[in-house]
Length: 398
Figure 1 (tube, helix red, strand yellow):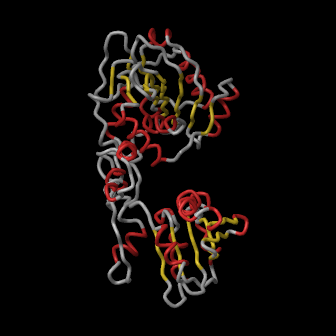
Figure 2 (cartoon, one colour):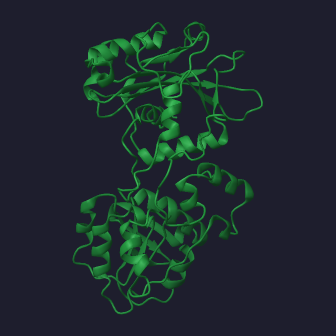
Figure 3 (tube, one colour):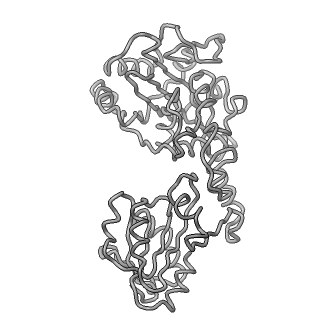
């Protein structure tokens, strides 16, 4: 879109021009910086405080649209041109208002985006009706960009691995609904091992906590190992805790869960064996229960204190209780669901994430974690997802 903008600026008549991004920072990073590299700093001058940029001497109004009320900032203005970056991240009411302001003779809007679900307003209200609305649509795949070198393309595919909705959208350029298993690339045979390599020691421990009162509570321990021959660290999910109050007929308080977490971190927690994860099997030296699944002697030898304890951000009272009990690493986790899912899928594809068989609840949850096709949006079925959520919280911290 950069070259289209530059070409038009040389002949457009007088009129207001709007350039929109999800935020002004993302607009600067994705559009303005590349334009500046093309025309030089003197010919692309950003005045952030005034929300203006001067490109080839032409003043352009810039705006971020990351909130639902952002449309109020452009009400009452007439526009000759609008350029939109990351259009699928722009609120619907902003787009509707912007389109209604394209009132100058010959006015037009241009935009770029990665595809989303077919239920997204941009596809449903505009792209799917392109013929009747005088809209032109171009579809590009990753291979359509001749300027990308092979190494960069390999990295992008690794971030959006085959077998996931992210590959279908961001690599193939398709507007597809998320359906089926979330981690279609997860294979319990290839992505699980009995335990971390015994000849190496963990360099770092991070913990994720998905907290529930009526719903199950899950803890996941993620350990960092430096394996010779691998350029990047390998993260092993080594231990888990799982408590289902409805099955156990006992609802725990914040203080009781905090006490469990402290004992679990020290490797001395033991739970009454009552509920095993579906498909889990007991082996020598391995304890499998509804609340914990770990190799106690091995973990004692490997004791590592957590660098961070990433807790379900809605569990503010539990976070406070943990801090009162001396676990000051407990903090509200980043809860970007789609980004966390993508990072887990990427790590699985790259061999950067391995799940130990001492985490049967996590393995079972990963194998059954599915998209909610009835919602029409990118939402998962909120059922038996607690170990995966705990993993997602800690992976988002990496």
